[in-house]
Structures are given as C-alpha cells and as structure tokens.
Image (cartoon, rainbow, N blue to C red; front, side, top):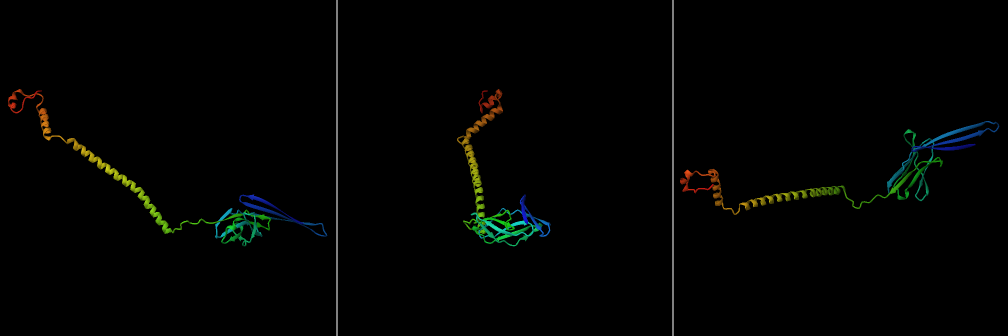
Amino acid sequence: MSCSVSLNVLSGGRKTVVSFQHHSYQHCNHDHFLICILIVVLTLEADRPSVSVPVLGNALLECCWKSESVTYTWVMQTPNSTMDILNGTNPVKKKDGVVCGQLYLPQVKLEQTGFYTCVLNSGSDTTHGTYLRVYEPLKKTINLSETTKNKILIAEGFLLLLCVLLPSSILLLKSKELNDLEKKNAKKEEENIYQGLNLDDCCATYDQIERSQTQGPYQDVGNIKEEEEEIQLEKP
C-alpha cells in the first residue's frame, strides 16, 4: 500500500513543496510490515512576472526550481482561457543547485500573448508563471537619418540664438537713438537761451556793473571836476 501527501510552503518569492510518499509492504507468510517514507523537497524559484517582446521578436521564458529528477511541461493559457501544451528544452543547471526549464519562442506573433507556466511532475505542482506580452512597435511617421536630425538641431540652436540676440540688439539701438536725441534737444535749448540777445548792450551793462563795484556807492568830491568831463556824478 502507498500514499503521498504534498505540503506547500510559501517563503518570500519562493514556493517549497514537501511531498511525503508512504509505502508499506506485507509478507505473505509472516506478519511483518516494511514501512518506507520518502520525503521529496521541491523549492520553486521566483519567475519573471512579465516579458514584453515586439512582433517578430524572440522570447525566452524560464521556470526554475531546486530539486532532482523533476519532469516539467510548459502550458500556455491564452486570454480566451484555452490551454496549450508546449515542449521546452532540456533543464539547464545553474549555480546554487537551481535548475531551469527554458522555452524559446522565435519570431513571436500577437496570438502568442498569454500566461506561461511550468507543470512539474505530471501536474502535481506548477510554477508561478510568466505573462508574455507581444506588442506592435510604433511606426515612425517621419523616418529621418541621424545626419538630418543633427542638422535640424543645429538649425534650431541658431534660431534660438537669433531670438535672443535680435531683441537685445534692437533695445541697444533704441537706447542709443534716445541718448542722441536728448543731446540734440539740450543743445537746441542752449542756443534758444542766447538767441535774440544784443552783445553790445550786454557789454555796456557789464561795464557799468564792473565800474560800480570798483568805485563803490560813493564818489570823491574832489575828483568830480576832473571826472566831470568823462563821467557824470553817480547818485548813491
């Protein structure tokens, strides 16, 4: 008589499956029993949650575990809830005793989008699984070469430089014109101040003012006769 019990233990991203297989044998002529218990520990490694591949690209999926003598089969579950069985490559051994089953899909199509899992030991255990997303890449509306792109960037930089320099140059020219205009107006105002004045009258008035300052407000009476012929007596 034999029986088996599986116990699943989750730890972080890993899933450990402990299987107990019990076998008992009875001899025909004796009442002796032989009991054999086999414990199989299967640790499932974390799978990649999703893989995105463009149309006609190559996809490589992996499901990994830690155990010996494990058989596996790839199963794809489509969005329409249909199940397809796929054949993968032989298990590949990696470091730390990890064994990985691989599924290589060349030139994938949109119909191959789905959830891929590994069924281990004829359906007793399954891996976490990986979702494969096949997408169509965006098409370029304008296909430009790198040389053309560089030329466009240079032209944009030149235009940006012009946008910065032209306004500043215009402001400088306007400020210079305003300064010249102010200088011309100031010069015209000075000319208007002296316009219409008689220089002879100005000189006579200046002589009188200067003479009054040198002689003072009073005159010497003794010198009146001598100066009478030249200058009349000025009243104080």
